[in-house]
Image (cartoon, rainbow, N blue to C red; front, side, top):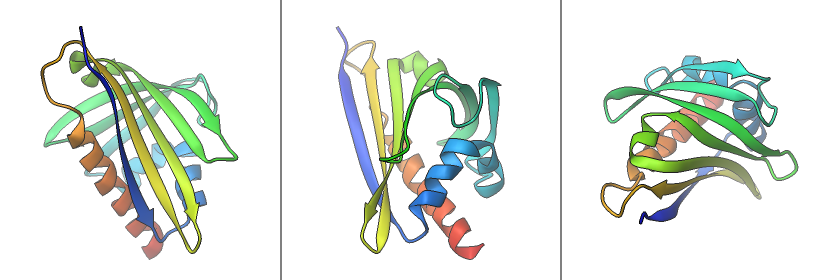
Length: 151
């Protein structure tokens, strides 16, 4: 018997939400230039960036450890600016039976927000929840925002 759950964090940004959405949709491979301490590479393994069914692999550092996560783009809702990824390989799947990551850009008047959702299913009832991943996404969002505001 395992535990299933969902964690969410919403980060307000001053930079354009459209730019943020387009970055994750069409140019995630540029992340290594924008946040090189966190994302070292994003490789396309199958399909096209920005297309559901495509497979990409992230090389990252989380909690001082390098890792990789291979993900399939499950869904893109252009109107709502939502991209949903399913983790299919990598270190996360040693602790979690399944994991999905959704990035959603939400207009909020004069500013936008980035909502990160991590849905997960653990193999058992014990062990940590992916709160460190949420901290990673907050820092990533702030660093991408700073990059775009300074560009």
